[in-house]
Amino acid sequence: MNSPQNTFAVKPLSKPIRCQVEVPGSKSITNRALLLAGMANGTSRLTNVLFSDDARKCMGCMESLGYDITISEPERTVVLTGGAPQSNSRINVGSAGTAARFITAMLAANPGVYEIQASEQMKARPMKPLLDALAGLGAQVTALEKEGHLPVRLQGGRLAGGRVWVEASRSSQFLSALLMTGPLYAQGLIIEPIGTEIAKSYIDITLTMMAQFGGSAEKCLQGENRGCYIVPPAPTPLPYQARPYQIEPDVSGACYFFALAAMTGSTVRVKDVKLSSMQGDIQFLDALQRLGCQVAETEEGVTVTGPEGGRYPGIDVDMNDYSDQTMTMAALAVFASSPTTIRNVGHIKYQETNRIAAVLAELRRMRIDCAETDDGLVIRPGTPRPTVVETYDDHRMAMAFSLIGLRAPGIQIANPGCTAKTFENYFDLLARIQDGAFDAL
Image (cartoon, rainbow, N blue to C red; front, side, top):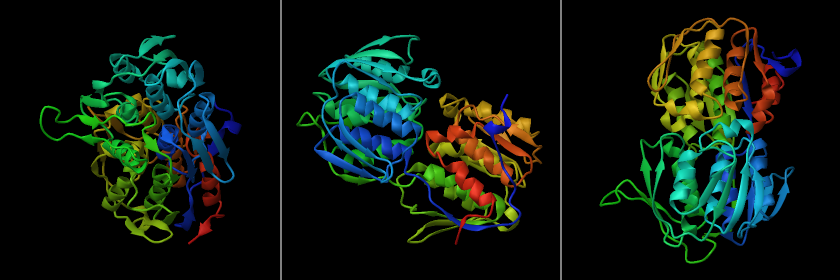
């Protein structure tokens, strides 16, 4: 049971607002940049770095592995010198899925014995597809508790590489991990995805950032390797080149404020976000335009103006490439004028929590009619009853479902502190908005 001190009471907005907000740096880009800088020749300076539970865990792992890293949270910078990880090290990735997958793959391609610990939440999340792939490449993987899950003991080495198969339908992070670390193998890698690839926008981020750090990889479109990713070996032990690198603002975090505009007929600008962002969640703006929102880019950022009175239709939408916003769309669906169908997001059952089950449970707690489909959800609009929303220690459940309370009275969010995973001041910003203390446009 949640105590009053461990909930956030959301207050409905009395009228549409016009405001500007600033969101932190992208988690996806921050953690990829940390890994690439660690494998780069020289010293990289990363700016606009996200400081959150996940990012701090990734930085802490790099420190534990002996990397020369200087961290300044006030300046939001990290200076990291690339090199080989210190052998015979022990790290704890906490609940950081990106750190768990990316760093494990890097360690497998370096000599030494490594112990990788994790939080109870991360222990329950899938690792078997990546661990099986690494074992197939010659790494020795020993489960310390449950097979196919963290924690593990990993003995890596200078491995030959070659062809490797990886399950791609559960998490794009398995494929991204192999792509970024592929140049460490003597022959490089030919990565053959098994199953339907999901969240391809995250693979695009990986490929783009590899190129930005001087690496290369490409998807083969013909011949015997059609559908495979080809990662050539690096000519030197460190496959990337150090560089100054600015992290994009987190579009995933920005989407909650864009959705706020849609839901309440408000105008919200998120500072420094660009429509050209490499992050897949920028596609959420296309869905908002289908709801009647106006989207504009200026030098200051992207502005969304919601439909008058917050009146919009339900839509049928494939969210595979931006599935982190499934919960946000579910919150919007509550107030639509017709049912909403969200498709092709079955993989979100295997994330921080079973997100489909969590959405269904919390909407039903509000007496909203909803149902699971083969690969997603159908939600019928209704009037939410006051309730305390359980968040399952899932930052995205907390942020998305808080939006419902901006339009319906009596909504409280349990364990609001779970947003520290990616956006630790989210509820501070929301409190300012609902109290009228926002930065006006």
